[in-house]
Image (cartoon, rainbow, N blue to C red; front, side, top):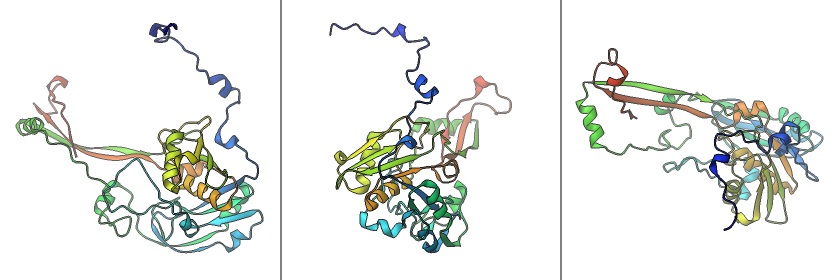
Length: 322
């Protein structure tokens, strides 16, 4: 307790050198794509080309004949692993649609992973992906939030496309303000849908350590949570999964938790018993990665006078958003 106590004035308002800048700016950073393990194989995904539709057939014959291809996995191949996808973003109302690493009988968005090719190099894997033939029976997609609210369920068997209803708590004071306001202005506020677009897209290297242990290198915003998520997904003890995150070239929420592609790569590693690497390219990131925003708010605002003639001080800014 006799150590010198840091004084805030030494740091607040001062230009503090970032300790990692020199290493990164001189090319000495270490990212997930820099990880090379003995015997490592490379993965690439066959992705859905329609926004919504049934998968009629998947022809893998030509792709499997490609020299250097070790394995091609579809949803059926992962069934023995009893994978249970988990998410922390939304505790949806039951029943919830099943989510699997790879699409089985239908696709719900362009870029949805349908099959996973594992080969000696990324180039060979991509060549094999181009040789996979998938036949779809296309359906009319739901593009906007309004389409989803009034259209048929995206996932068959669901009653609607509403995942969760979170009502605002009742507030008598606010209700009185709205009821007594001379004017109530209503409108809709929309935020456009965006892509996260980090400089470094998603990436993962999965390596099996013994029978039931895994070491995972991932571009992640939270390696501890990623380890817990993978443990829950594969029914393993969290103590048996180690997630290592080196430098991360941006994330913006995209890398909060591992999702379908990362889980599929780990599944392939478990089945093939070799280290497997997947690095998302820019096209995949823009087309298939989770997106953000795309929100719409119907709002109301009480005002003491007509909004066209009132000054800023005359407007009561209490919003009711539905």
